[in-house]
Length: 112
Image (spheres, rainbow, N blue to C red):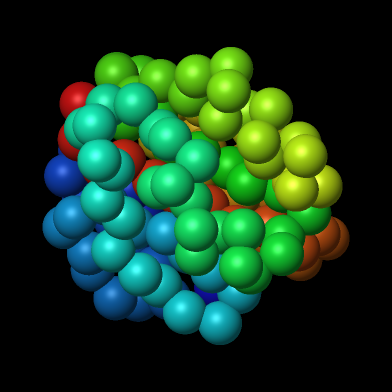
């Protein structure tokens, strides 16, 4: 899957537009809802872990409002998943760069 376009509040993946937060898994795209809004807990990443990626790219929002606590990062490392967290525009670029070279998943916050 390729990210064709991202702008505040919307993303186009493989030509299809989404207007809510998404997780791009190797075989499908799912909605992403975090229990505490702008913080990513390990429980928010169940589908990511089940996909067994080498790497997770988190889009932290247009202005970087989403935070990844140290405990969540440590959980991912314990599962063998490397983490890159960037503002969403840069996260989209990074995902597109990595997607053909590695087994990568993206979890993207589309607004703030």
